[in-house]
Length: 318
Ligand code: XMP
Image 1 (cartoon, helix red, strand yellow):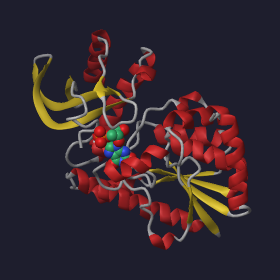
Image 2 (tube, protein in one colour):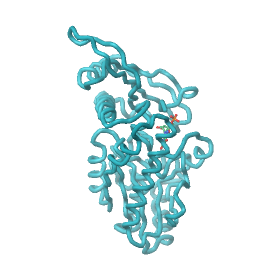
Image 3 (tube, protein in one colour):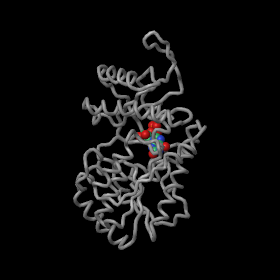
Image 4 (cartoon, helix red, strand yellow):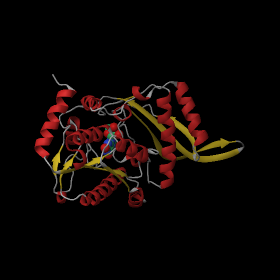
């Protein structure tokens, strides 16, 4: 029978044997998988694990700072790299979904590669790939994401990096990864985090991306996600987020006519992301959230709720 205890024990022993005194590089995404992979390696080789956490400017509001702090508290040897400007600059004027994914993927590799080169004598690249990533990498459509490990580009590492790959979670399913994380004493706020796509808010801003749009969507998303937590709904939902639509619509504020942006909220139930049902969130919650968003976020005058399931709709809108 599989137990997290036994898994941690044998994996640490195997990693010790395999890696010895070598240095390992790992890209943290803020997600469950890369965080658990990092903690396993940290337990095995301590500061010989060099983690890199890149801010692509498309993360959730304040997430870069708060997650970086969390990683440091966990004792990880982690470097935060704020490359927001570089990503936004490269994305300027691009509105095609796959075009945006490609740019984000390319810039990520460039930034990651620059940082990896600063770690002298690194021999290994660790990835938080889990078992379903391997299956989905064959069947899923879409381009490279901002995270080296993603179901869209398993093995998508440039040859010139010449690092050997180590993937300690490659035989695990998500619930097992969470159990391993708990066994390692990790914070439930990390282990229970919803999935978040590598290209981040970049594929939730339909059309071209600007700093202003990112800021609007971060504010909307924060109100929605904080609300889910406050109402005890966060853990009942598999994934949730907001989309900024490339649509202006007419509204009214006092006796002024407005012509402003529309956002769509999406919350789904799923087990693996391959199929998903929209969640029947309480009307009172939707009502409060919609009011909060429209009252607090300048530039948004309309909120809609996505009631499409996958298939035929996908979870993301791009
Ligand atoms: P879709 O939209 O295809 O999403 O129903 C299924 C799951 O995959 C995530 N997703 C991505 N993750 N890079 C990623 O790392 C991507 O380009 C990407 N596109 C979608 C999505 O958030 C959902 O969890």
